[in-house]
Every structure is written in structure tokens, then in C-alpha cells.
Image (cartoon, rainbow, N blue to C red; front, side):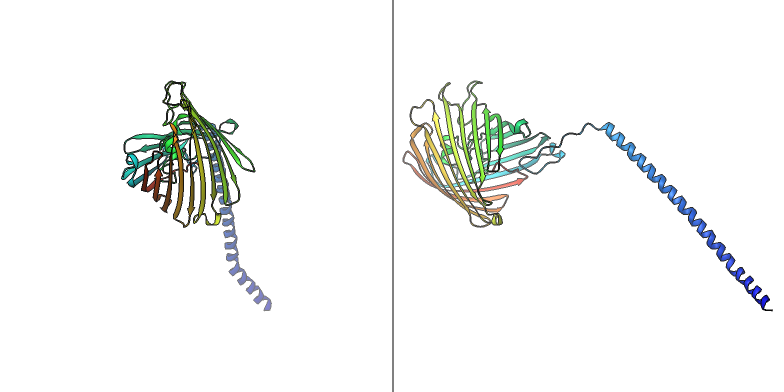
Length: 401
């Protein structure tokens, strides 16, 4: 009886567990088949992607030209993309000047939009960049500078070709909106051609000689020979300019800049008459790193000697000294002292003094007032107040330091 009951229970257990065991075995089999299919399709897709990349790489290599060398570091502005070849950096700078008081010959107009300068600057190719500066004045429209720069010539040379301001001294090489005064010193007015100064079409070669102590920059230039000082009557009447500059950091906050210049060209006195110019400049700068936006101090002196071959007297001499102090984030004060002989008569000497106050609402605008006292060599005196409003728009690259 017991044996029969045990046999019955065993039969009932098989009846209930048999189907469940069979279902589990069938599900595992299906899962294994699906996993095998998934792995097969994954491998096929990976193989197709690898073949497609190989074909694309082969087509790209066959269609593209040989790669160009990496472009050199850009000069005077942020690095430009290839689109800059067709879309150069464009900027405009406006300079409004007013004057009050008496001056011999009338001096500056009472109110005048003195100049508008428009610049176009861009990379030409991996080996050159171009800079064009157009000036729009009350009476004329002209090209202030337009040149191409090759910064990667052999032997570390840098070449500029086009129309440029001569590398003579500090003030002559500066555009009007960069000069730290409303006007230009008497030395520049009498001996170096005034606002236009020495600017001509030519070729410039320069080389930098850096070392651990300081650096030297040597520049040699040859020009057509036509400027405010020089006159070229024939093709051989070219003008020459040489400039040597030395720069040294004294401390982390101070530096010293020393320069010497020479220029020679024919003048308007005759076909064989020439003018020679010698120049020297010294600049001391103090700008503490931690407070550079709040304060700085600058002291500069520049001198020029002019010798015209048709004159037998002594060379004409001119110089100025300038002090500048920033006493607040947006405020700067300065003083300039001038002396200069006349270019054609060294016995006549003009002297002057100026005191300036400058307010900069931002990096793109400037308001300046200048009191100017001048005692001319013929005995006439003048006391004037000059004021200036200057604004800029667009990406205008930095000027030489």
C-alpha cells in the first residue's frame, strides 16, 4: 500500500515538472540563437565601416594637393583664419581737434575733423601679411601706409615693401592717433616734415638680435626720395634711412629703450644738394605688473640734427622732452618741453612748453586737453588751448611699441 502511494506521488511530480523543464530548455536555446545572430551582425557592420574608412582615405589622398607648411606667427594682431584672405580686419579711427587762443599764421582751425583713418589688415598667404591705412582729411584723401610684410626670410630678416613711414626716431614713425599729444613737437614741425613727416615708397629690411641681456633691432631702408623733406628729380635720387634700436628690461616693471637714426636724400635747393638727418631717442617706462591698469610713468627725450649741404653754417638742432604719469585708471597727465632751430636758418630757435590732461572712457575713445605756450624765434609768443576727441571702431592691430 505504501509502495503504491509512493509510485503515485512520483508520477504526479513528473506530470507537473516535465512541461516546465521543457519550456526552460526551449527559451535558453532561443536566447543562444539570438545572441549568435547579434554577434554576427555586429561583426559584419564593423567590417563594413572599416572598409568604408579605407576607401574614403584613399580618395582624399588622391584628390588633395601636398600639404603646405605651417604658417608663421602673425604680426600685429590675433591669428587669422583662411577666411581673412577675403575678409580682412577693418577699422576706422576718427580724430577731432579744436583750438582756442592766438597763434602766428592762424595755427590750427578753431574746430576741425582733422583725420579719419581706415585700415585693412590681413594675412596674404602663409609667408606674408598686408596692411593698408587710408587717411581722409579736410582737404585730401591719401594713402598713409600700404605695405606687405615678409616675416620669414632667410637669416632671420623681415622685409616690408610699399609705402611706409620712415623708421626715423619715435614720433615720425607713429600715426597721428598714436602720438601722445594733440600736436607734434616743434622738432618734428621744423626739421622732420611736420604731420606728414618722412613717408615714402620703398623697401625696408630689418633683423632682430635677441639675447639674455637685451635685444637689438637693425633696420635699413631705401626710398624713392619724395617726402616732406626729400625731393627726387631723377631716378637715382633715392633716399636712405638707417635705424638701430636697443631694448632692455631693467626690472619686471621697468624698461629702457634707446634708438639712433640716420636719413639722407636730395632736397629742393638744387639737383646736387642733399639733406642729412641724425636722430637719437631714449625712453624709460615704469608700469607695475599688479597695478598696470591704474598707474604708469614714462619719460622720453628725442633729438634731431639737420644738415643741408647748400648751407655753410652749423647744423640745425631740435629736441623735446616728455613726461607722462597715469594717476588713475582712466586719467593721465603729461608735460612736454620743446626747442628747435629752423631747418634753413639755425640762428632762429623756437621754444615751447605744453601741459596735457587725458581722459580715456574706454580703450576705444579718448578726450584730451592741452595748454601750449610757444615763443618763436622772431619774437612772437602764443598761448593756446587745444582739445582732442579720438574714437576707434573695428579690429585695429597694434602699432610698433
